[in-house]
Length: 219
Figure 1 (spheres, rainbow, N blue to C red):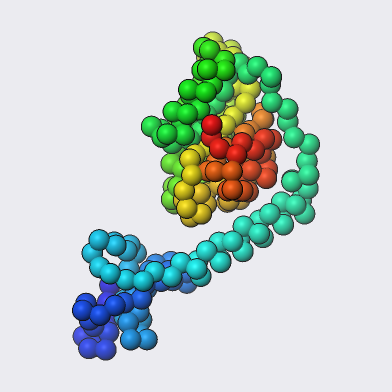
Figure 2: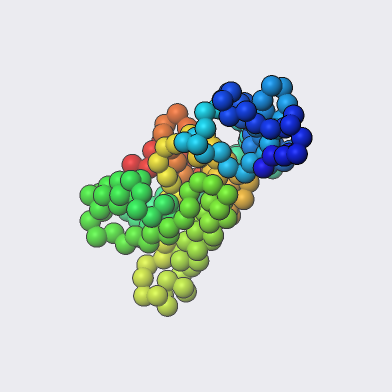
């Protein structure tokens, strides 16, 4: 969206390079050329134009938010609370992850190899993007209900005794839902033990810090 199409100063010269950056104040991408912000856009499509992207500012803000959340949880004693023990032989595992993902395939394969025939409930959620935090929280709440003895009895199945929240690797922004407060507090409030199995070994997320067990990868 050009800021002022009738003003020639704001006209984008598509033969020249533009500078595109994440505008946190407007929650959009801003297009800058010749030192002047000429347009704003909600989406940047790399296939349509050549540009430079500066994501450092956004990453810096996100990392600061992550640090503040960790300090808040630490001040509340959430990071030092006693952890719930995992069952040595689980009877019913709830897996919260992306449906059809490689991470789910790996977890299913390994669970079946270790405990043949074990009951698994797959709760499919979006694991990145704006919808992810709420969907992950709803997944944890749904798994928690299945841990209730009376609910499990009505469903004629063993209660969930461990929850796995996981996804495969990705960029820091791909994994960011697992650094957000609603997800962290849902993990803390879970009635049964939660395993955080997100990304790769080098990725340490807030979900890892509050979970009862951190798995370095979904496998």
